[in-house]
Every structure is written in C-alpha cells, then in structure tokens.
Length: 510
Figure 1 (tube, rainbow, N blue to C red):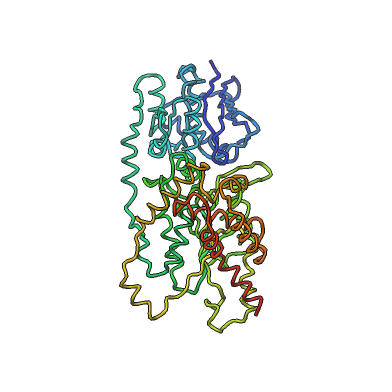
Figure 2 (cartoon, rainbow, N blue to C red; figure 1 turned 30 degrees about the horizontal axis):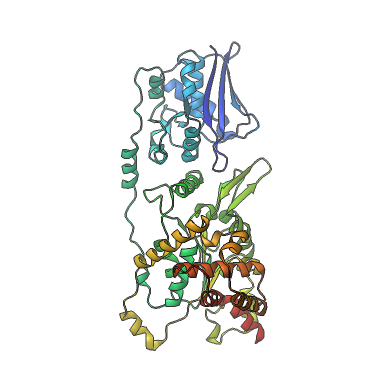
C-alpha cells in the first residue's frame, strides 16, 4: 500500500491527545508536504526526516509525499513527531507491514544521522498510551522518566534503524527493565543535606505555627525584622511534610516533564520546593507564553511555593495568584489554544514589617509603613491562613536558647503525619482544602464558643473567608491534639495567628 497510519501524541498542557500520522505516497513530481496545522518546528521535520532516512541507509521515495497530522484543528509543535513520520514513510513505501504499526505509539526527535533524541513531556505521553493499551517506542534517554509509569510496555531505542529492525522482526528491541531504569534515575541524583528544625535557635511560637501549617496544609506568612529566622523556617517546611501519594507524585512529575525547566530525579515522591526571586513576572509565576507553559505555581504542585521578601514582589504579580490559591489550578488562555495546569501548592511567604526592617526602630513613620504594607492587597492577604510574627530573641535569652536542645524535624513530622491521617479519614483531604460544606460538618462549635468566635469576627472586621480560615486552623490544632471537637483554646490560638492584620490596625490608630 502507498498509505500508512502511525500513532503518536501531541502535548497540550499536561495532556497528550492522540495524533494519527497518515502518510500517502503518490505519483507525480517529488514533494514532501506536512499538513494538519503544524508549527514551524514540525514543518522543519521534512528536512530532518529526509536526512535521517538517507543517512540511516533507507531509500527516500522519489514521489509526492503527503503527511497528515490528524486532528487537523489541533496545533502541533516540536520534534516529537519525527520518528512517527519517518516510520510512516518507510511503511508507506512497503518496507514495514502496516498491520504491525497499530499496536505501537511512537515518539522521538530525529537527528540527521538517524539517532533518536529525547523530547519533553514523556510522562503524559506514556500515561495516555497506557490507558489506550498501546506499546511505546521511545528515545533511550527518556526511558528512566517513562519507567515511573507501571504496567506499560516500553521499547527504548537510540536509532531509527533499530526501530525498523524491530518492526520487521529482524532484531527485536528489548523491553525496558523498570527496576534497572529506576536505579539509573537514583544514581543521577546527588545526595542533599537535609535541613532540620533543630538548627533554628528559639522561635518556639513560629515553629508551632509551621507545624500547624504542615499538618493542615495551610498557607503561612512570616513577618519580622531581618535575621530572625524567617527564611530558615520556610526552608524546613518540606522536612516535616508527608511524602506525596503515588497519584500526587505522578501529577507533579507530569508538570515537571512538560516544563523544560527541571529534571525528574529519584526524589520524585518528595514534595517540590520552589523559591522564585521577587523580580519574577506574572507569566513566570503563573505560566504563559504563546505555547502555554507551566509557571512556578504549577512546578510547586503538591509542594511548597516560598515567596521571600513578599512586599518586594509587584502587587499585580501577587494578585494573579488569588485564583489558583482558591481553585488549585491555572488555566492559560491564548487566541490559538488553552491549557490547564494543576497548582495545588502550599504558600509560604516572608517579609519585613517595615521598609527599614523593624517597625519599632523609630526610622519610619506609620504612614510610610502603611504605604509599604499596602503593596499586599487585602484579598491576597485574606487567603493566607496563618500570619506569624517572628521576633528577635531578647539578649538575656539568647545564650540560653543556644545551649537548649531544640526539637528535630523527625518528631514534628510524626505529629504532622498523625494529624493528616485523621483529616484524610474524616473528609478525604487536608483541612486547608476543605469546602464550606465540609467546614460546617466537621467544625461544629458549642453555642458559647460560637458566640465567642462571632464576637471576635465582628470586632476585628473579618470577612466570611477569614472566618472559614480560622475554623480550618482551629480544626487542625484540635487534630494535632487528637481532640474530637474544636474547643475554646483552639479557637483562641487560631485567632492569634493574625499578626499582620493586628499590625495594620495598630498603625491606623496612631
């Protein structure tokens, strides 16, 4: 036959829609056309494929070659279709039985020599191929990443000739050994020194707040003078968080796979920690581009996003985070396409309460401090569950705190894990992610405690969102104590974590 059909997949966000590569050889003047809404990098496949076929020892058909990438209304980009196009041409020329191709999906960029190069977005491709019950022929360099998906047949290859020999049963490719590939993945990851909570001198209240944030997956803001340990606290949050589940790890690894920014390593089940500089743009934080790419909020999916020097970020940049903080995903819309990326991150922020560093140093007036704090909008601040003041250690306590033995991350993590288990058994998610209905069902108060909370909310002028966040935090504090119901002291502690709001009210009264 002069017609061959080969299957591959495109990349849209973290999805991999099926692409049918139809190759037709017709009589007429020699030509090579690719149709089906190809971008420039796909159109350039004509030269890559022609050179790869010739240098690999194949005869390039002197016919009119038409390659259709269906569906025609889906834009295609990148070199991921090269291998499928080349196999389609070989098959249409009668050198490969067409009925053998229906069991496979192909992916890989071709070098001019015929070598098969790695491409981004391998995890979404393999996940989709697994659902379709297809075998995958892929670049050898992508095999360790693809091995993270269980129960799928992988045939890693390094050259176009080896793919041809496999398809004609001349020299079959070896099925990937996932155990060996996992070992290779581990060897590529250098050991990192773990950060421990015991390294922080003093700051018992801040450590307590960080434990609550870890237990309930709450967003947290540290505010205080320079040198008080805000950044050290944030950097140690990952060490007390539970390991990701298999599903969470695969979702996060899929974002990493399509990002072009990071490599998947042996610690792929550990929660990511992202710390963008305060000069980053909204597109870098949220994601964007003419071909939508994930930003920092998606790369931190199921992990920690740390924003140091919060007030130095552009206010517009911070405000574009308001939707993903609530919804847990980001939808990037462009004229030609739309992509949705997950963004279920835990926000940790740190800032100085004054442009001079300290509110009480006498160097800045209340009006100037308020203008400085107004760089953070009210709606953004409302989405942060815990606002914690990190103070300087008094001189008479400094030496005592240095000599005191501080609790390590291991002991704190055990309490966090126990609290998370309670939450998952109750509603199937952490307290920080509870809906309004779940809050009403799980955060019941006695009439006296309800009146206490209502009076506090009215006095402080808090919104319904802030009211719900206080209840979520109080529920987490109760879970850490393994209490079945929220009590008065749980509410009082939850309301005490409103440090920045208290500072703003104090400055307005001066």
